[in-house]
Length: 139
Image 1 (cartoon, rainbow, N blue to C red):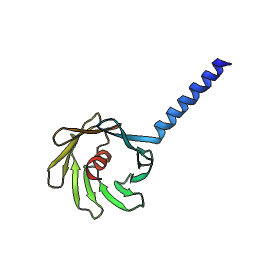
Image 2 (tube, rainbow, N blue to C red):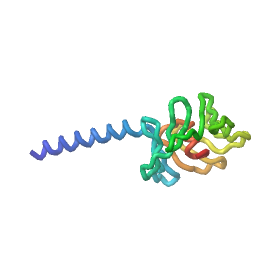
Image 3 (cartoon, rainbow, N blue to C red):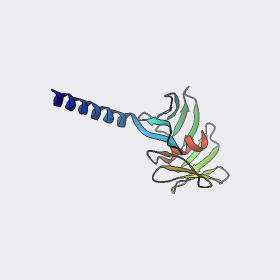
Image 4 (spheres, rainbow, N blue to C red):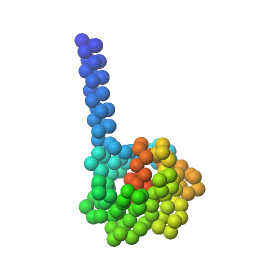
């Protein structure tokens, strides 16, 4: 009977891990490793308390919790406000710059986020640079 219980417990644990992988597409942590929030598969960013703060849409729009457009992004790495004014961009090498071209920081391929002086700000479970740049540098 104990072995059946162990097997069922392991199967349940495996199912929960699989489900959590499906729910969270990207997770963010601060420099100390404390969880800041996550982006779900549907594009919703929830903070550590579970509050929905942003929605990253497939067409590049980023909305707040009420549905208002805050940012617009494109495949070239540009980040614009709702009116279309350029706020900054993410270069292919991960460097994040503001509209004046001043370096704000860098996002590594491993998902480390650093400010312009190289100080670690946090990490992302995936190096999706646009989402990461908005959360760490523009939001």
